[in-house]
Structure formats: structure tokens, C-alpha cells
Length: 181
Image 1 (cartoon, one colour):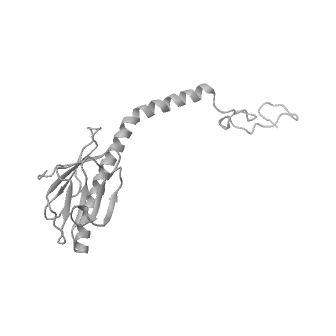
Image 2 (spheres, one colour):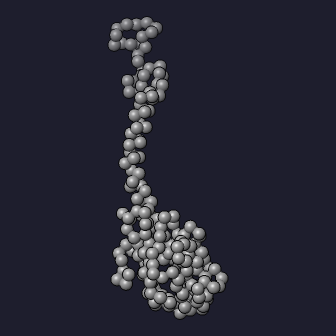
Image 3 (cartoon, helix red, strand yellow):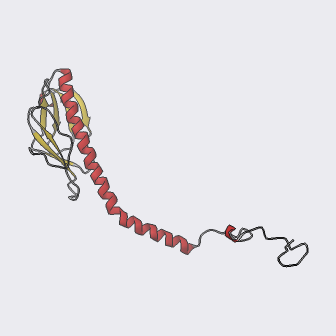
């Protein structure tokens, strides 16, 4: 019975449904076409704004990953030379991005590790005056070198530098150019 209206009878039950529960009778039919178009336009605007930042982030992470991987290859080649008691060569041929770590001077022996034909990361380049380094059984390097890892098509991305001393020590990748470079 609905006591607020003062009426009595079979159709005068109290309203149990509250206004915040939605329309009576379950007439909720979803979104209108206009609402969906507005949402798609807003998402498109946000995607357009975020795209340059996203591609910049991808380039920056590619440079950092390539620098870390190249540093690891230098460390690996030196460790293998000391462990095996023989010369180990790390070689990157001119105009390629393929890097080979092999036993013997000038990569004349067994290949220990090879970074594929596509190189370290897509779009990343390594600049250096040196294309080949031999590590002796004592861990020393045949040359001192400076390696610059960069994304040549995006000049806004900071390059990473790795310095290799004749003692065989390689500095960790850094955005700061070492004194010897």
C-alpha cells in the first residue's frame, strides 16, 4: 500500500525502485550513434597528440638497447679471450650492421656469437673509426676506440657512447661523450 497518496487498492504498492537505479522497465538500450562518434573523435585527437612522443620513446629505447647489447658483446669477447687463452675478434664490416665475435685474429676461426644481418636494432647505427678489435688472451684490446650509437634519422635522440681502452676495459654506455672520443 502507498500510504503517501492516501489511496488503497491493488495497484497502489510503494515504489521500491529509486531514481538512481535507471529507467523503469529496463529500457536501457546502449549508446547513440552520436555518442559513439564523439568518443571516436576524442580518442583520435589523443592518439594524434601522443604519436610523436611515442615514436620518440621507441627510438630512444632502440638506441639504449643497441648500446647495451654492443657493450655486452665487447665484454663477452674479452671474457672469451681470457677464458680460452686465445685471440678473440669482434668485427663489424664496413656498411653493414652485422657484428661477429669469432676466435682468432680478423674473425678467421669459429664464430662464437653473431648479431644477425639486421644488426643490433632496426634504424640504429654505430659510428667508429675502428671496424675490428682483437682481444688478447690477457684481455687487452688491439686498439683504443670510441663507438657512437645513434638513431641517424631522428636527430632529437641523444647518442650513446662506449669507449674501449687498450687495456680492454669498455665503459658502460652513456649519453655523455667520454674524454677519449
